[in-house]
Image (cartoon, rainbow over all chains, first blue to last red; front, side, top):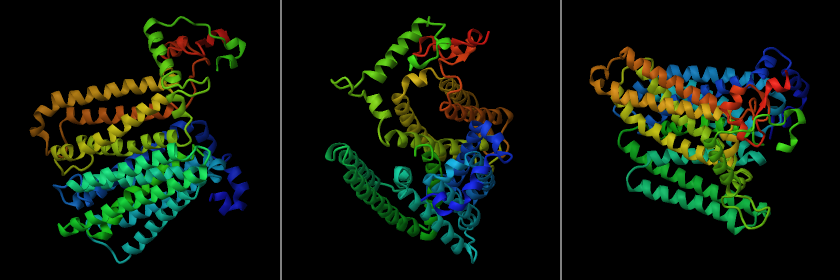
Length: 272
Length: 225
């Protein structure tokens, strides 16, 4: 699914965008603006990851969650604003290509979901002062993120980009899970990854793409269940120890992964 | 590649220095011979990695996304040293708790970065941005050394200060600047503005060791006298 599938009538408008100020200036200095966009996402990703990891019992655990959030909330806001502005500008300069890109659509939807989660949900959840509409905004943010994942998953050549989201989630859980469970979890991940390599390189012939796709899909599903299973079990312990509730933990994971999805979508624009 | 160069772009400088030639020979072996099968068209491991359906893309994507963990968290640490973010939390807590995350991100970046280099060693070797990136990485390492050997010794005096002393703030600013330059150079590697074989100044040719490259070194003065 691409924007050109959804809005075919916009083709003339999209083709004209690159001729509009400031798109032609940006196109001439595309690399600089691209770096600006990447640094904005890094700022946003790093700052929001600190709050989210703290909510999952990692990072600045000696200090209350609220203090971590207050310490980086301005950075998150600056990151969101700069990511959006730089994204729109480099998007204008490259509009025709993005219009036909499933990876871009995934990135675009994830970006909106990320903004909703950053501005309307993370703050109230981290500060422990949820408002009456916080869950509604959370539903919208999570829904948009799920939609972006769906676009990436069904995007044909860009589908492998989904492995970034899965591996990032897998790494977060590896850090969050503690004790012997961490070894079991890590070993399980390695077995699933090893099976993927074996299935795609030894079991099936390279030309048998249908079987390779099926094997990848089945093993990715298994990996997903493995990661979610351990996250849920660890989540119970966090709640029992007086940490954030299930809703806050979900937001913490989603807040990191939505930006990973946006970054993965952005990178895979170049590959397919 | 060399045969596609227009006649007036033929290499004018072809005398590389010894060390550069030795390094290049090693990289040629790495790219074209290591792991190559017995048949003529069997790829080397490097070529197989570059030609893989999705693996190279996944490596590059992972390199970029791990940057979010490494540089994103490093940015917060640097801003704390500068007295800009998380000012109420002592630096020692920030360092103790966040450094493992930074190191984890850095480890993934190094592993994926080495694999990416392995896929196109010759391209990277003759790329000015790659060389600058390595240079800035060394500078970043020196700044870390300076911090730990000099500033860290008196940390108990400024640990909890919302606005640390000038030297500490400068170290944070230096770290922020150098890592930003590493990221910028890393992104510019993808652009072929100064690719060897293109007409350019003697300085650029020299910095990239173009004389030993397949495309050779072409002086801009020779093409546009």
